[in-house]
Image 1 (tube, rainbow, N blue to C red):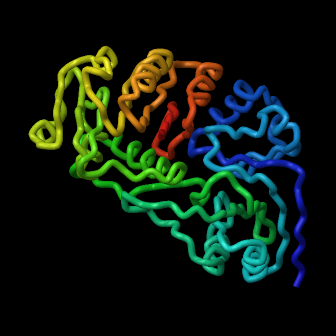
Image 2 (image 1 turned 90 degrees about the horizontal axis):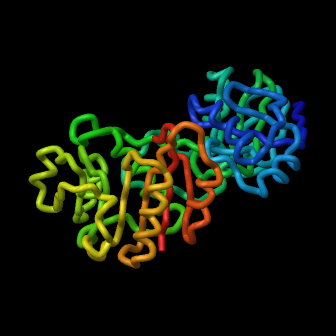
Length: 325
């Protein structure tokens, strides 16, 4: 048996699908990290100077990376069993990102302890066990890291989709953001007896999820929701510009949601209005990007106490802000 493990001095970022250029842009413009990748393995970007990245980023990680190999190593091996055995000796949970040798990668994964790599049924709780990432470079070499930035396999979360009932595919964003709110903060999902306020609710994808959970929803938009939601006794619809309504006009609610297309500056001002009012405990909002990203403005969202900014698997050119009090 010939197994050789070589520790590496770099760091590797796995961007969200088709988001590699946005990740590279974030590294340059948010962190002023101008080092170019020394290696690219499919979408996985390896930078040889980890210390330079941490010095530039102050130990923050890019939003457009679905997971990061923090302490990567290369492993050389002869057989599938050797590869799986070496990974298992380091820790239990591993998931793969593959761009080559797919059959061999599947055989290695089958020899590793089971983890759920399938689509999930919402609602779901994500285990908080460390999960490593590995990528085959060829039939006898892989790059891996036991320490990563995500509890999700390869940083990926996909739900079993309902193609018939939701009014729009935007419903997947609130399902993912609520799942992450539970993961990060331990907060329970909206439920029967809780009150939610949703700004810009039309056509009703987010409202649909909330009513499926049993919550009451005060939905505000200039245009009506789909008829099924307009007739739902859990939904109170108000035709109005949601951002011009004062929290005192809405009343106390458990959750505030917004997936409104608006300038981030306006969203930030609206968020502070709600937080200053003390009329809600929890907020989840989509930050829609308007052209070039203003990173100093995004930092103002991040600095709000009890807040976390993420890029969802179901986000596009946008970020999601989560605040749980």
